[in-house]
Length: 328
Ligand code: T6T
Image (cartoon, rainbow, N blue to C red; front, side):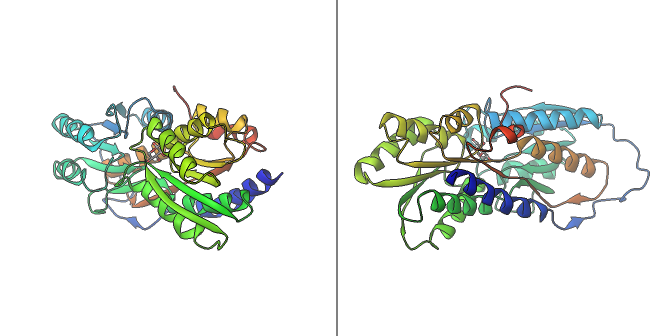
């Protein structure tokens, strides 16, 4: 019951959050005139990492929308979430001159240079999920409101532990705009609970095994750890493994971002208390819409925010449309 109340509260807050989405519309061209159909209808989606349910779900939405609008979309992703691996992919795409690119930059500074090269070559650049610090490169950014998602995770954690005890954050890699924002939102919100001791954040390099090790180490130094907030899929899956290995899943509350099949299974089994699911398919769909608008000289929205939904064991099956996919 406690989980249900926490989940419902978060869902209510998030609905408001999604309703407040959008941003300024910037005129890019004729704004609805009868522009000639562009000859180049090639789009490239560049997710942060290959074969990962969040990005697969994004790709499914993007592919569907591209087909609907009469465009071809291909996907190119690195084997690991790593700027050094993503940069040569961007450079390779540059030489193929697509009309538009949807990219999730794996580092908010390191990808600025290669993405600027795309822009300077006349390719329409849309950020999906993650973003650069430099907001002048992309035409549009489509993502969840990650800072508010982190704050809502903090409220959920506080409620689950009766506003008392020690909590930690498991983050991915510094320089990932989304997860940095989630951690910042969490930290800001958790500070409002005087009975909660915030033990700080640990980075996992987006490796589940590192996440599991970090949880084990924290359980040794702080055996009375009350809760963990994992800022994304891999850190959440790894945190669950760490708690399981230590036999502590029933005592330590775990709240994670994302909703991979493993995370959903852990929620169903009661080993995870809540998941904050994103809507990656809609991010992909909206990203295609913005790129196509820019290519066709129509107005583009600079900021688009998509839904976040808190899932608990009590309400997860009713919200199964938010579970991430492993194939389209
Ligand atoms: O949480 C998502 C995404 O939003 C984030 O930017 C990176 O990690 C994920 O892809 C999940 O692994």
